[in-house]
Length: 303
Image 1 (cartoon, rainbow, N blue to C red):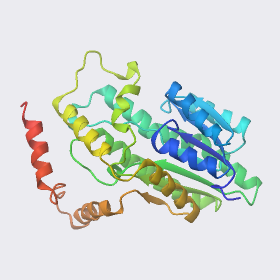
Image 2 (cartoon, helix red, strand yellow):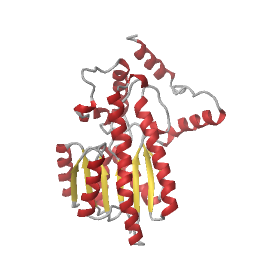
Image 3 (cartoon, rainbow, N blue to C red):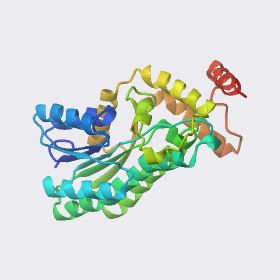
Image 4 (cartoon, helix red, strand yellow):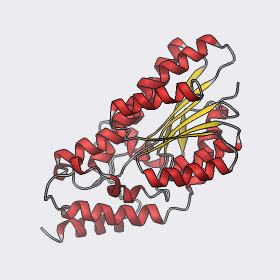
C-alpha cells in the first residue's frame, strides 16, 4: 500500500496554508481525509471544497494544544476510516519579539500549539499506525511534522518561535530513530519551510482568550516582529501548494528532511560550523547588513 495513494490522511491546520493544499493533493490521490482545524467556518468551507473534489472527508474542529481533543480526533479517525497512512501534524501559530519580553501566556500558547500539538499527534497516532503495520505487511505509514527553518537557525527577535521549532525538529529526528528500531513500515519526516505565504503571520486572530494576558499591550519588539514577519511571509515566492507537493514527494521518496528553500541551508551550515569550531554565533545579517541595521534601529527607536 502506497500511503500517498489511497489510504487515510489526517491533517491538522487543514483549513488553510499547507494543510489545505495537502488536502487537495490527498484528494487527487484518492485518499480519505480527516481535516482538523481550530477555525470552524474556514474548516467547513475547506471541507466543502475537498468533498467537491470527490474525497470522503471527516471534518474535526479542535485545538491541538489540548490533549483530550487530539485523543478524540484519533478515536474518530479510527472509527470512521481506520488507522491513518499519512499524519500531517501541521497546525501552528507565529509569534515574535525579544525573548525576555514574551509573557507567560505567550509561552503557553506557542508551546501548546506548535510543540505539544505535534507531541499529541505523535503520541496518539503512532500506536495506531504501528498496530496497522503489524496486522498488514503491505501497510506503509508516514508521519510528517511541520517545523520551520527557525528550527535549524536562531534568527533574532523570534524567541519563543525559534525555541519550539527547534524542539519539533528534535522530536521528529528522535521519532525517526525510534521508529527505525521497531518498524520498517512507519516513517517520520520533518518539514522546515522558510517564508511562504500561508497566513501564519495572522495567527493571533485564533489565540484563545485564556491565552492572552489581561491588558497586556504588544511590546515594541513584538510589533516590529509582526511587521517584519508580515512583509516576509506575504512576499514569499514559493507557494503553499508547492510546499505541500514537496511533502508528498518526500513521502514517495522516503526522505526525512523537507525544505522549501534549499539555499537557506547556507545559514544552517554556518551555524553548525560555529558549533563545531567553538566560535560565537555568527552575525545572521552578514549577507544583508542593511536588514540588521533596520532591525536595530526599529528596536532602539523607543528606548
